[in-house]
Length: 430
Image 1 (cartoon, one colour):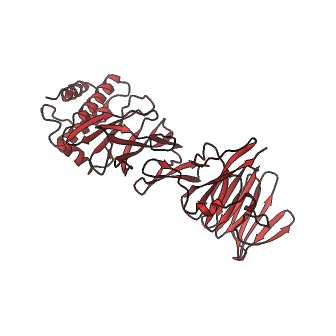
Image 2 (cartoon, rainbow, N blue to C red):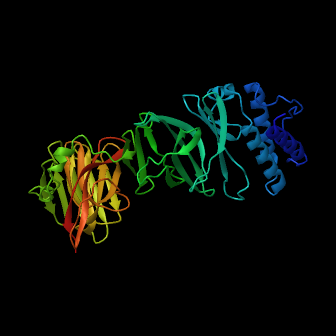
């Protein structure tokens, strides 16, 4: 009998001494068979489900029961030798009976993850990979510098060496209120599952922290060829940054129109009327302390600026569309279709830009920028390079100069995605 299986059976029998709550029913399973694991997927499923029932039944204060049951779970998973068990996993839901199971489409990798319940009030996720090397089944417990993580999906890519790169998608929770999303990359190299440092900064793992009140996840497109990384301005507005896989690493790939954007000059940002260049022409009327902008499509934008607030009134055909009281002073910067552009107070290198959607009747974009213009359905803007704008664009700036990058977002699409243009400039900053 396999030694690891003996350990699994022995520890599970010992854990039967744990006293489950009276309102919890634990399914019994016959553990006398010497061919419990490795014969049929059904037998494996019965065993692993029973173990997770035991884990759930352990008292939170019974460390002996929790530790021995987790040891049994790992022993059973490490004893998998039958490839059909991995193949059968493809037909099960990702979250099964209190644990997660992520399967690769090529049938070579399955990752089991679960909360060991040994973290006290925090989640303590464990992840164990079972993978196929030729006809052999191997297993390995996954360790991470960040985390811990659970995983519920696996994407596959091919790198320029013809290797399969597995992108594990999952997350975790540092407490009952804070959650995080995670993407981590592995390859099967020389018979071992190995971290693949393919994300920006030569990292093998990306982590996105957020709140459970407004959870924000990575958006994975085209089977992980394209990943949108969120960073949130406030609880209702999310803007994404884009990276793409180039057969070696994920990079901030310039947009297709980057040659046009490369010709963009600093002095071109504003029209003669002082609005963003590229926005619609309008007539402006001032009546007392209320400024009203009238457009050809019968939209009028009127607002009254106080010392620390703006009262915004939007009408169409003299009928009210929206009336908004904002707790800050804003300056109208133009209209394009159903979108209005505003700026808040700031400095030449950093001011806050707001985009308001007339159809959705809400702000859809709040971002710190230097300057901006409108190009068809795109907002083109410069942004001071910092930790939020880590790109491949670099230039040598002189003393008292800072680096700015030109970026673009299509403000008619949802979600909004910030793309790099691969171009920028140095500008003197006091």
